[in-house]
Image 1: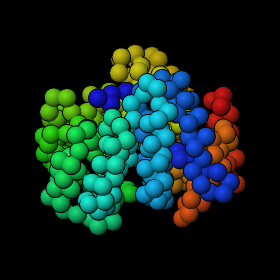
Image 2: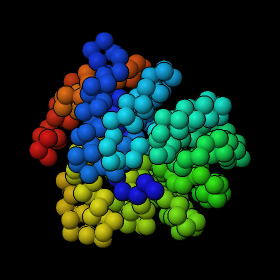
Image 3: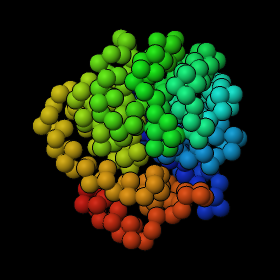
Length: 289
C-alpha cells in the first residue's frame, strides 16, 4: 500500500506564525515532481503537536486538495484514544488514503493498552492505518509481539518503525502476515531495513532531497547495490546533520532557506542555532543543494 518513499512533510509557517498554505501547496508539487509516492502531513516533522485541531485538519485538507498522483497518509495520532479516533474520522472524511497513528505518548500504556488503542482506531475508520513506533518520543516501545498481534487487526496495514532496534525490526519482518508492510522511520536505518526485507521509508530528508531519497529507496528495493551504495555515501552526512538538533528544527531551517515558510518551528521548539546553521549549510552545499 505504501511501499516506496513517503515524505513526512514540514508544515510551513508565515512570518506571523500562521500556516503558509501557498508554501504547503508548492511543497506538495515539489514532492510529486521528484518521485515521492506518498505525502505525510501532520506527523512529528509536521509539528502536529503544535497545531490546533482546526489547523491540523486544514493542513490535511490542503494537501488532499492539491495532490495529483501521490497518496496521502495523514498524521492523526494522539495519546488520547478518543482524540485519535476523532482526528482519524475527520481525515477519512477529507479523502486521505491512509492514516499514520503514533503510539500513545507520555501516558506510558501497557502493551495491552497499546493494542486496544490501535484496535479502536482501526475499527473507527474504513481506510488503512499505519502504526508509528518511536519510543524516543513516546516513552514506550511497541514490542514485536504486540506489533505482530496488531498486524492481524483488519485495517492495520503497516508499521513505521523508529525504535532504532534492528533486531526487533527484523523479527517483525520475518514473522509478519502477508501484505503487512514495514517502513523505516529513521532515514539512516533505511538501507539496513530494506536490505532485511522492509518496504520503504517515511522520510525527513525527502523534504529537501526528494529525488535522491526516492532514488535510494528504488535502488534498494530493486537490489541495485551499486547505485544504492553511491547514494548512501552521498546522503549519510545529510542524515546526520538533519538531526543535529531535535527534528524538525534542522529541516525547518533548510526548507525555509529553500523558500518554504519562515524556517522556524513553533515553541517550545526553537530556531536552529547559528553554529549548527553553518554546519547544515556546509553539508547541503557539498551535495549540491
